[in-house]
Amino acid sequence: MVYTLENLKNDLHGAWAITRKDLTIYYLKPNIYMSGILFPLFMLLAFAVGRNAPIITLIPGLIAITALFSASSIEPVSIPIERRTKTFDRLLSAPISIFALVLGESISGLLFSYSICILMLVAGAILYHLSLVSILILLVGIALSCFTFANLGTVFAAYPTENVGEVMSLLNLVRLPLIFISGVFIPLEAMPSWGRAVSAISPLTYASDILRYGFEGVTHVGLVTDIVMLLLFVIIFQLIGNLLYKKFNE
Image (cartoon, rainbow, N blue to C red; front, top):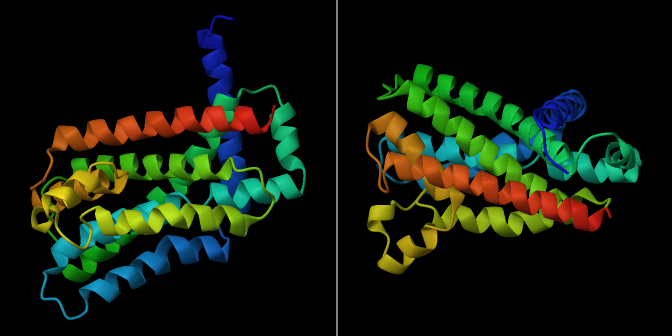
């Protein structure tokens, strides 16, 4: 079957319908805000207390891990709940493709997370009078980061369970180690060679690096590399998500 422009139009329409549904129903869940805002903030404070690092070096890391936790928290909550209430079966039987389903779920995480990160950016700029080197790169970097981590959450939500806790537990096995290997708290320049090698497989590395460029105008791996790698992770997570949803819902 040839995938036509009309197929793409229908898939995008279906994806947006799923996005609106998720945002309407799950936006204000307390556990999502807890994971998306408070946990990253407490993690940053735990590492920042007692250090003399300037605030401008901490804010990019805070926004990066906020994007990680908020963007990847929508789907692991919404999809298991919908499996329990059998509304997920209605999505699967709807005249939309698995691609539209995965894309729609990921876009909802993107929009939710992006709104949180922008609020944190504005609050930081006002409270600490931060000067930005490139607001455009910062906004693009936040969007790419949020979409990458939203796709990550969608991948884990493919696990066939009705229990939110099971998905979150699996997801945290990945999210927590990413924080420590991605140069958020320990600069990549200060890591040993093996540490930098491990950090290269983490999308959070490129997310925090591109945000650092937006604030300070410096980057460890290069701006183009950051953008290319985040786009590559989006594609990889999309492909894995499509495969898993097809496998578990045949």
